[in-house]
Picture 1 (cartoon, rainbow, N blue to C red):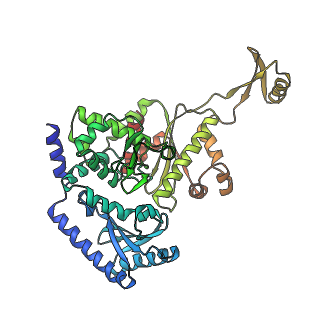
Picture 2 (cartoon, rainbow, N blue to C red):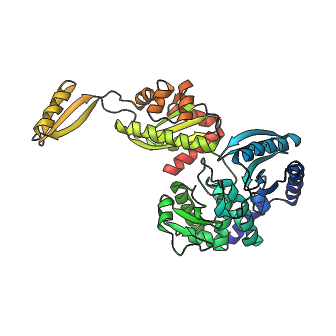
Picture 3 (cartoon, helix red, strand yellow):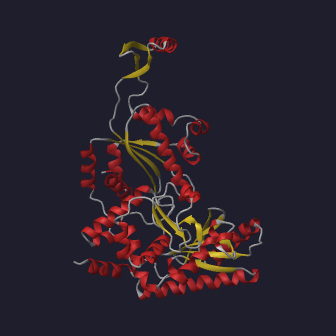
Length: 463
């Protein structure tokens, strides 16, 4: 099949049916009608946000954001208090359910008529440069898209979303660290088509810079410093000081570039596949062939939103990697999982270290230091001279990684925090955690499809 026929076939699968469009339109009207009845007496406005208002949504997408617009002079305390009250009232009248979530300020995360609806209070400011909180920028995104985004490109955006979704890099949340829907729309608008984008992206290296509104002739020094860790810099069309691609991790940037290269070299429908399956026998064989050691720490997920959980999980993983490497265990790779339960996955080069450890000391001609070294280590091991330097051999305290990790994770909440374990993780670990060896990890993958997918992605990523 040609590339065009593959794209055409994929687009048919990911374009919502007329029936689905009609159902969405009717449900949104009902929600907005109730919203207007509640906020009109208060003199407030509203706006929708998300792909549903610009026809770039994927089938079965059942979520959108509803922003409640407050006057610019409203006190922050009133915005938060009234915003939550309005969100709860809308949800109750529509016979839905809700939880209170927290970003820059609290908002209502509701389920209404089967849709996930974030009801977010924000300020109605005159320009994006005068925003009082990050969410105030969203209405300006909507206006820019409506004014600058040709409807003929909707299909290309859908294809780009599905392309990134199929490789697990769609979503700008802290769990995925990938491409937001807004970023997909800007990229397609900038390059004029999906094919043009894929051709350009296949040649990307690092420090890719896109400024569709041409705010800057070249990136100013202060923004270079601000975006120094970003491989892809896409200046927000409504905010010249913001990178829309800031959430994209270096790993996911590289995966996207490699996928573009692979698709152009050999076009295939698999790049737009919805299928998520794992050949468990193949996965198990792949893990065994690596001849490394898999170890996992499994515990109850803290009751926080993913945008708080995943940064803490990654910080936890980084800290334990440092602890292991300080004791000379070699960490080949690590990753984090959070879906029903949380887990830190560690892959090490070996299961045990030698029982003794060689320590290099100072040159023998630095008398005071060499004497101090000899005095210290003769008490606990042997000392000798090798090529004009002092050396000692001492018994290791930990020869297995699990021994070291158990010691690190024991004690009070205060002790865990002092050792660098993030707060929410420390609270959960303090109550209970479980070590899983490689056999138990594979066994868990056989019972839990989502974890199996995660394990497959990890193995594919590090291979």
